[in-house]
Image (cartoon, rainbow, N blue to C red; front, side, top):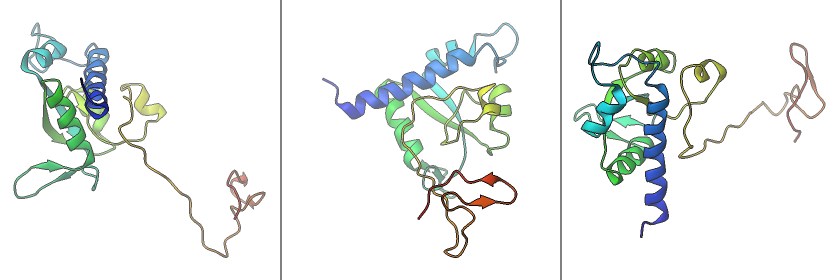
Length: 163
């Protein structure tokens, strides 16, 4: 019987493959005209090519060995291995150009922790999150622009809580 962590890892691999399947119609095949679809190539080779963003401690690449480590590579590699797949860390990308590389077929998935937004939703689809990031807003103690009920001259009524 599979344990909960291995089931979760299998779900991540299934989500990545499902993401690739839904997007192969929009991406040209890397092999050229008339060649097998990218999805079929993934199934045949059991390899998922990942574009990645270096963002320690989530994703780290050792400059001497090229070995990937961090929460994201370790989770994805374990999930892929559990289902008989391999992750190929194909291309380092930036947040500003990762969708273009996906569309161009440079990699099969963006294997990075990113915030999903409207412009990215046109060409990609998020999978089940493998962890959550807390985001906090901070202000100087004497700065009361963002207190409950406070007003900022440029933005109007605040939506932040007080204290």
